[in-house]
Image (spheres, rainbow, N blue to C red):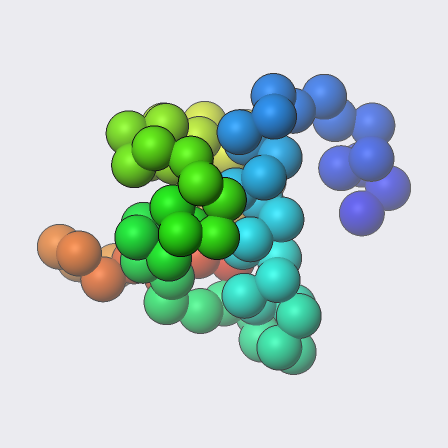
Length: 77
């Protein structure tokens, strides 16, 4: 968490990350299946921006994603 506090994240990435935190650690889970539509609904961010934000968080090694087709699992690194 300390390293994350020093990381500058754009607003959309921060909001998407907070949803992933809530859906995982907020329910004492290391990872969870979270649909893009759930993140869209909780943040109000357009689907394409959510997808881009997840990709960027993954590239920065802040979250990991795994899964096939439309079922994706996300977790904080």
